[in-house]
Image (cartoon, rainbow, N blue to C red; front, side, top):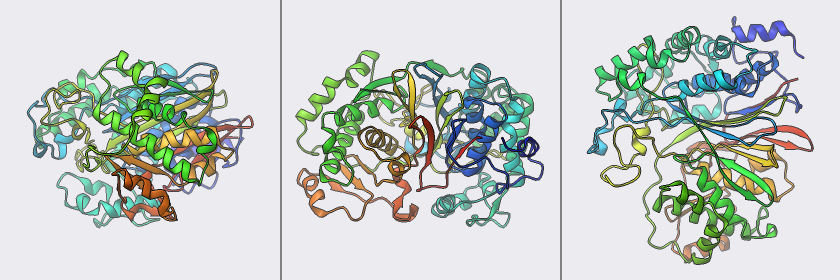
Length: 544
């Protein structure tokens, strides 16, 4: 085990930066593995496990650290969904959906949703406080779990290449917003370049307050009062009463299917896990040899399954438990595939914006945790409290406007529609794969097709994560590999699909972060291995 003094110094962050020279080993071990979207978050989680914390403790440290070091994706102002599997047990879903404020008007129009009014009541701090109390190891304190995030907010961290690309794409909205987005820029008002150090002293003070006062302060203490004050001054809808009455997260039974003998679990509605189950059921209709990498049959079959799954989700939101059970049944998938002909009569609307972060953790005892967290849009509402330093989310944009009878119609006290799909694959009741992704509807597409590759091929988890991906939604197909032969594309054009191309601004070595950011941990030959998506800045760490 690494020198305990060095680890203690890391946790207390006395003069610490992200280039700590005494990091946990990146080699595979059976002690504990974490894969997250920033190296700082992975390092923080691994250090907590080396200190005696379990996977939930590590996840809490990673989540707070990601809110600092990947501010465009998640943070205190967002929502968090957790799928947790204790050793030798089926997973449990921790539903951390955010909720619309009581003042939300049912007749709101799109133009009403600006800055603070785009935000639902954040759930992240409530969720992290809840799982700490119920599932934490008891070997590390709440203060210790927040110490890494406080250190990175105070002393800064180096901006990675992907994070810089995101800054570059959203530079204008950050620099033009009147609501304290300068907290996420350099002192001269410029966006940070790769390697530049970003410090967030105001956010550091908020995190220090949370560390001392506890998670409840966000909902019923000084932080809650500051949020309510800022919302009132800026015309937002969230009130102190909303925060005071915000409920604990609900523990739910995950959605579940089987895929070639494996048990697959994911997050239930209002999240998108049921659509992952549907797509896997569709893919199971094809034999394994028709789903092998770099083949035309796989290209066509996966895009067909993605199209059918997303189209069913869009046209028929799940309305009851009975409906849910029907939609994730093998028979339902078989009938969908049998009746499929063309992409006609499908909405050609643009896919809504959305971003998230995902990380996966497994500890030495086999506790597995999949966490997806978000402020929804890149840099959320482009609005932050002047005294608290975190960005509000944009989940109000995920409600249906002008459709009062829709299941997800805008209104007070509602959970937002979500694509979040943290997923755990088991054999029997032993976890084998922990996986998830950011990226709006691409979350569902990426998770489903990578689970299929993991089951049906002999590729390593690193090869699977780095393989090119596809996506299909709203009658459009997207593909990542520019060398895809034209004869693979023509059948979709003949069925009235539009071939669409995402922005190239987030490309890295021929891979596009549009297609998600998989951070996963897999059991291979009895050893847990992690893989971080090369499309983003993440890293995998293991403890000794």
